[in-house]
Amino acid sequence: MAVLDTHAIVRSLTDAGIKSEHADAIVDAVRQAAGAPADMATKADLAELEARLTWRFAGAMLAQTGVILAAVIGAAIAILRMLG
Image 1 (cartoon, helix red, strand yellow):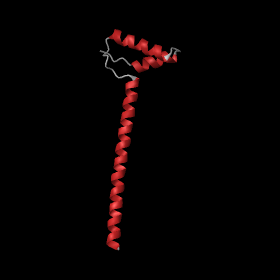
Image 2: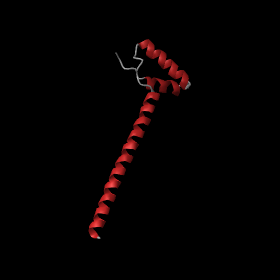
Image 3: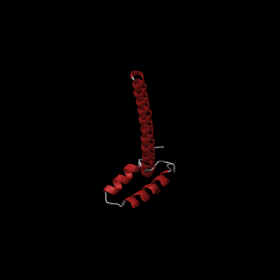
Image 4: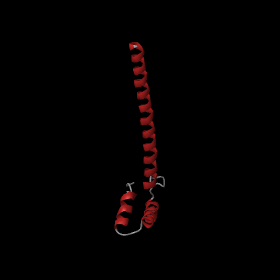
């Protein structure tokens, strides 16, 4: 079965002046007629996934920064205690 690039089809239709909502409906009808799986990712699905991954990455970076700061502060305190 050939892959149906629904995003490219929507882009072509909207570039031709068709409203985005209508282009989505047309592509959905073509996808159904072509027998493409209904569980294919849509542009909205990918945007949601991107947002979730961005937040997870930001959280991981914040946690890593906290660990590094704690280690640096701990080392600085240990050095100050040794010196004085």
